[in-house]
Image (tube, rainbow, N blue to C red; front, side):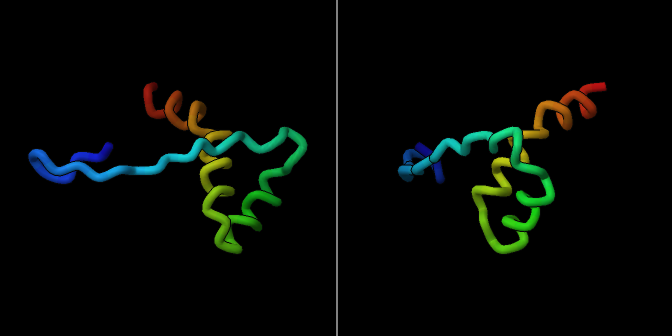
Length: 58
């Protein structure tokens, strides 16, 4: 549930985005992103998010 305002809630459907297989290259994922594949964006973020947060924590 997402709280919009006090005592107001809206159902939010959240779908898990799996990591892309390790044999899928980043350049192929980027092509999919440029073609409008929202799930491809989520998958590349999941692939690198730990590294990004580690850099920010330093």
